[in-house]
Amino acid sequence: MMEIPFGRGERMVYNASAPRGRAVLVRPHCSWRSACDPDETGRGRASERAGCPVAVDRRGAFAAMRGLESDGVVTIRILCVGDVVGRPGRGVLADHLKDFIQQRDVELVVCNAENAAGGSGLTPAIFNKLLDYGVDAVTLGDHVYRKKEVIQVLESSDRIVRPANLLSSAAGRRWIVVPTKSGRFQVGVTCVLGQMFMGCWDSPWPAVDRALNEMPAEVKIRVVDFHADASSEKVAMGWYLNGRVSVVFGTHTHVPTADARVLDKGTAYISDTGMTGPYDSVLGRRKDRVLKSLTTSMPQYFEVATGDPRMCAVLAEVSPDTGKALSIERIDVHGRIHEGGPYDADDGRPQKAGD
Image (cartoon, rainbow, N blue to C red; front, side, top):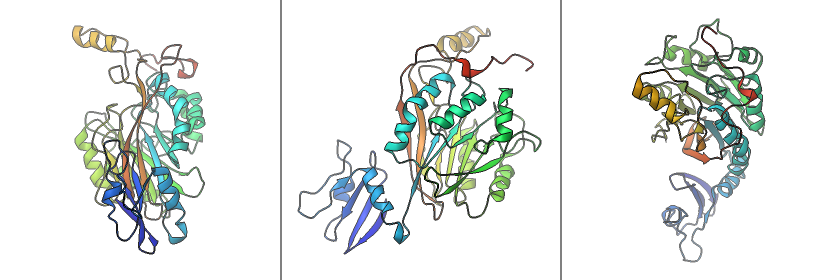
């Protein structure tokens, strides 16, 4: 819950735990609870007594909050999008991201795109389209170099990061600082790979420390994508960075977790945002192909699925003054199936053994 004084004993109260959020103007003789507690419709209960608070929607509440900037009160919203899987995942972003940004007044979008091209890797064409859709910063994971053509983007763009715990000789930036959409604030973004069940690379712990220490001290808002498999390692990273970064969002498993919360020192955390891609699948791949492989022990080509595409993400409310998070909310936006199948020309050529 967040309170902002208005004078004459009045205050704006924002209840982040209510569905879609509720904000009310509370006068001295009233309790916030009567208006902020959600009823069965998901709206706040407003007392019938004259002069008591009336619930307003979240956009209106934060518009009022931004009106208090002269008193030093301001927050911004950061959307962290989970692993984009192939054309179905890109289609959801193309259809819905700009509207979502406008409707929810999002200032920055961070998106993991390591599966965006044909289900594995990223191409320059897709990278540019993601920026056109409204993405501000792209993070990657263990498939960072699966499409070799992305190396030129990694070497030239200041809107994309590769995992910070790869060797120093690896192409790409370990961290970036990007402006918010309004241009008023700067946000530091980095990503690291987990070690448990993942692969052989440097430890993520000193790597994330180095990335954060190298960021300009005046950049208070910082976002970390922890691309890891084990929930225990992800939870540990959340506590390790608690109070030092604004958001830690987990990626890689493609399955959204139910543990989104703000930790006690002001870091918004979730173990995994889930994928942005087809959920009528096994982690984004055709069910029949995966099941045949599992039930026969015979190899199969795991083609990207198409059914039930969704954008899964988290939306965090952050104070630019302190870099601390005030709330975090899971996002699940349902999309539509695009004609033409799971692949198009932007996916690049299929990867072959030895590439």
